[in-house]
Structure formats: structure tokens, C-alpha cells
Image (cartoon, rainbow, N blue to C red; front, side, top):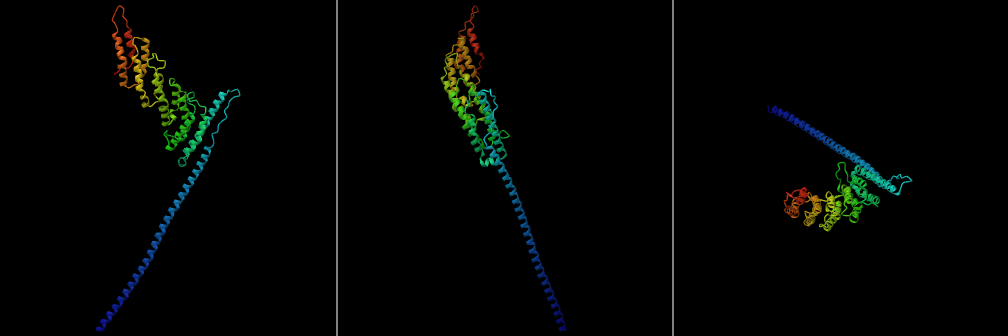
Length: 375
């Protein structure tokens, strides 16, 4: 009995050992297969990541090559355009008949030079717009003014600004477009604007300054006003301010100081040579003339006699143009101080005599009724 039990247990034990061994072999096989497939999966994932990285590098290199080719083409185009711009302006031979006089030949030559300068400026403008990056990187604005300045200076060599106020404006305006102008009319970058200012300062300012200093007569403002009016849109603010504040305004102040206010009628009343400058001078500049002007007008009116018809008309004509120039307080003070007391005295001298009435005091007062009131 015991032997049978032991045999059974031995058989069970052997079966269990075979089952455990089988399970162990199965587990080892699964683990081996797992390690094998896991390694293959990792290897496949790494290969996929390497493929993505190589594809990105390939695309980046292709984009860089494309960008480099485009940049190279742009550089070649800019170089070709710059080579064309650096050529001197080609002037057309003026057509002058054999019977043409020297003056006509000179005018034709000047016109041909102006046309050549305009065409040259147009080439620079095309270069700046077509190759904006190269224009800024190479600072081609400096090259442009370096070449343009001698040509413009030669074109304006014999220029008399007071006699020919508009000469050169067409050429300079085209160079403004080339250096600073945009399709919207606004100024371009600061470097190009500074380059244009340097060009104007070196070429245009000296003749204008010489004309205002040595040729302009203060009591004859028409030519100088026409000159600055023609050039105002083309002059940078610092150039125009130098002309008006350092050349024009001091001479106006000196002339106003030297004006003989007691001479009536005045051979050169100040409104004839001061008011034409009003649109050109800044408000602060024209306002600086007001104290001296008020003093001179008061000096004139204090010496005037209302019953002297000629002197009265001259005093009125001398005072009336300043009614909308002087501020309200100064205008009121001038009339109350120098005009109304004299008119009051004239009315007081009026004697009522129906038989032989003298209305000259009344008419003398009424001549001043055209002036704006004090309030």
C-alpha cells in the first residue's frame, strides 16, 4: 500500500518537474523573442528618426542653396545696375542752327545737361527700388551723392539764383526722388535722407546764400521771395532755416531799424518789403519783427497830423496792411496810443456853422473808418 502511494507521488512529482521545465523553457523562449523583437523595434525607430533628420537637413540645404542662388542673382543684378549708374550722364548734342546766337546755344546746352542729370537720377532711383537690401547694406546713397555732386555743381556753375530762381529745380527734384522719394510720397531711410541733405548743402546752399548775402536788396523782395518759393519744397528744413533765420531775418531786422518812420509819405513803406516774406518765414521769426515794427509805426503815427490830408492818407495806408499781422492786443494798443487821440482832437476842432460849415475834420476822421476796430 505504501509502495503504491509512493509510486503515485513519484509519478506526480515527475510530471510536475516536466511541467515546470516546460514552462521555464517557454518563458525563456518568450523572453528571447521579446528581446529580439524589441531590439528590432528600437532599431527601426532610430532609423526612422535618422531618416526624418536627414530629410530636414536635405530640405534645409536645398532652401539655403535656393536662397544663395537668389542672393547671388540679386548681387549680380545690383552690380550690373550699379555699373550702369556709375557711368557719367550722357548728354544729347543740342540742336542749334548755324544762325543761332551764343545765348540760344548756352540755353540748349543747359537744357541738355538738365535732361541728362534727370535721366541719370532715374537710373539711381531704379537701382534703389529694385535692390533695396543692397542699397542699404552697401550704403549706395553715399556713392550716389559722391558722383552727383560734381555734375550738379557743374550744371549750376554760372547760376544766378535771383535772375533764374527755378534753374536746377527739375534736376534736384529728380535726385530727391532717387535718394528719398517713395511711391507714397514719404521719406525713405534716414541715411538716404541725410545723403540728400548733404548733397543740397554742398551744391545748392552756397549759391542761394551768396545771392541773399550779396545780391538781394531788402527793399526789392520779389526776386528773393521767388527764389526761395521755388526751392522751398526741395530744401531740407535745416537748410531752409539757415537761409531764412541767418540770411533773411537779420537783414529785415536791420532794414526795419534803419527805416525813417517820420517821413510821410514813405518812399519804401515796410509792408512792401516785409509782408512778401510772411509765407516763408516761420511764425517765430516773423513775430520777432513785431516789437520793432510797433515802435516804428507808433513813431510814424505820433508825428502825423490828421488835418493834413496827404499825410493822413499816407499814415492810413502805412498802418492798414498790418491789421491782420499784429496780434489783437498790439493792434488795439497802437490805435489807442497813436491814432484815436489824434482823431478825437480833430473832431474836437470841428465847429458847427451851417452858414459856412468846414467838414474837413469830419472827413479826416472818416478816412480812418476802414481800419479794423480795436475790439
